[in-house]
Image (tube, rainbow, N blue to C red):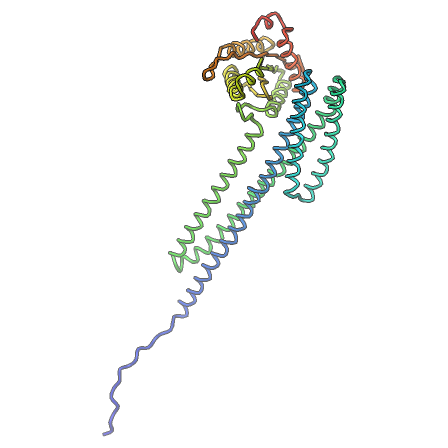
Amino acid sequence: MPEHPPPTNPKPTHRGVSPLILTAFVALIALICGLVLNGLLQLEALGEQLDVVVEHHNRKIDLITQTQVAAHIRTDSLFRMVLADDPFERDVLFLNFNHAGFLVGQGRDALRSLGFTAIEQRSFDAQTELVRHIQAVQERVIDLLYANRQAEAREVLAREAIPIQETFNLQLADMRNAYQRANQAAQQQAQQTYRRALFLTLAFGLAAIMLALLIAWYAIRKLGLKSQQIRDQMAELEQSRAALREEATHDPLTGLANRRLFYDRLQQAIRHAARYGGKVGILYVDMDRFKDINDRHGHHVGDAVLMEVAQRLLDCVRESDSVARLGGDEFVVLLEGVQGNQDCIAAALKIEQSLAHTTRFGDLRLEIDASIGQALYPDDGSDEDALIRAADAAMYRVKSGCESDRQSALPF
């Protein structure tokens, strides 16, 4: 019989990777790579858009606000120079006037350095011509003052300087509004980018979940952290914008409304009174001997006195009324819904009685004195400037003792 070869143990067969599994694995890797790449690109684009909002536009808004505040200070200093009779006081105001002009130029130079679009450049060039015109008019007013032609200086100030300055302020407000709109557009674009990134990421994630739940969960978790960072940045941006609005409309020392905000409120009150046939009262409060307090006890005591006066004024008025600090030791109170002069007198008496109490500031006991002038719409003026001038003139009559017997008998 023929011999048969001895049986041998069969070798194990190594099966290759299933084409289906290999395809799924490659698809998983592709989905994950696509997810990571898309997330990085979209988040980078979103970060750049947020940088535009936070760094560029807000910087321009801040510079415009600073320029507008400096322009207000410059016009206010010029206005006070026209009213001042003391040469020393006029020289001090002239220094403030020049410093404010330097700040206006500095703000515009910084704004120019940030760069403009073609439309913004044309607007800025037109504004430059307006600034030159403003400087020429203001220098003419100063020349008239130092030539002792105060009446002509007042006329040029009222007829040319103040209106053209208001035009400049409106242009700055338009620029600020334009950048705020650009901010909003950038935010909307960032939100769209975020939504697009979220949609694509979720689509890739759902596809990847079918193959690897762990990888998909990890990716979604990372995206959640990025989303929280974006929301935190947006919240910080909103807080920064709110702080800028607060600084632009309120006095930093007392927290009261500043001159610009008060004029807006007064203008609205006058429009309401004109429409419904009401009256609006103005009380112009000017502190007496405040310079002596600053000189004798220091500016920190003077600041404490100003804050105390601001609080007492707020305590004396209704919630519907407004109190503002115009600058220095000058305050103004807006009384809405008054019936006539008697209501204004009653409010002035209440303020006088409140200020009459001796106040302790640390170891010091100081008497706070003030002169109060009043004006009533429409009896004393038909617009906000006329009312302020009338109340200011009445205050000076009280301060000089030339008002009524009642007011001349008061300690204020």
